[in-house]
Length: 377
Ligand SMILES: C[S@@+](CC[C@H](N)C(=O)[O-])C[C@H]1O[C@@H](n2cnc3c(N)ncnc32)[C@H](O)[C@@H]1O
Ligand SMILES: [Zn+2]
Image 1 (cartoon, rainbow, N blue to C red):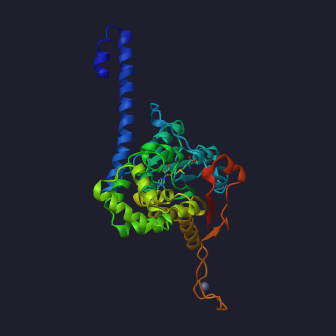
Image 2: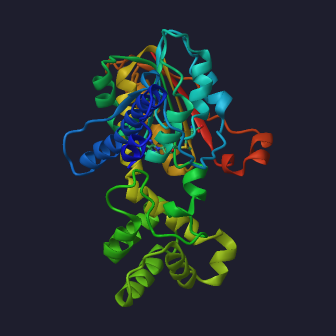
Image 3: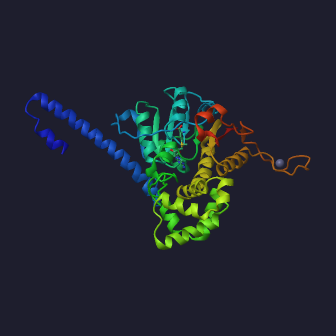
């Protein structure tokens, strides 16, 4: 249609120049659409267990057409996390959870042209925003990928080692507040919660998991006391009708939890929604794999900054950092070391760094954040 409309305009030389420029614009637009759809296909094929083909966009190669996405996210512990990386201007850095690009932009400020920043996010909306934000930076690449596939992403880019990695876990304000995504219990939406927008959704889990399976995830990932009761109520409700929206699920949870418990422990929906979100996105498995692979490709002296938002994530980071540190594992009574365990990393933060009162005042989502930093030997 674009082209048909343009054909009417070829009546003089000026018009043909106009036509040529429009065709060029049309091709560029098609390229943009193709890049985004390739991104989707790459993750879809991953979800179906096929070969992983992350899509990589080199920004300087073309100008992107601005697509309006109301993306909002206030970065947490931004200065502290980036300062913790001790950025070396000529080296390669990974922001494994790009989001709105807050941490990325701070890293980029410290990089020379010879340095590189690779930004990952598994959410196509976040990638779209990141592509737009960094399209003028030739040393930035945005990859729509799960950080659990970090090694494959780096192999595809021909990168053997990195000087630093940052992870700012969980979901962004955009994902929470955008009702369409179904992450939020007090906004009516389709029960989705998929960061990648493909694969198994929250609706599938809520309507197909057994009472035992639901109880387990509510307990393990939501630390919910009334896990069994809520699971039973879900089972009863879905006998009559599929549970399809966040409000339907919220109402079922409300009904299952006794009034006294609501006062004492706050909203059960918050914990149950968190549990389902973790299950939908296999967040904890990805975190373990991402940390392991990140540590493998970190160069000696390289650093990792990881921000967590709940105790399950923080426990994993704390324990894996301890493993990375390594060292002697002989019983304390042994006069000399016989295991030969070597120290392979140092904890830069013995205790996690927490946001200041001021930061929490300005951004209540920072409240539960904890930052841990590690340096490889
Ligand atoms: C808290 S936000 C990051 C915000 C970002 N640091 C900023 O300053 O704007 C978390 C982001 O990580 C992404 N994410 C979560 N788990 C991921 C994973 N396993 N792999 C890649 N991206 C992930 C989410 O889609 C979300 O956009
Ligand atoms: Zn020992």
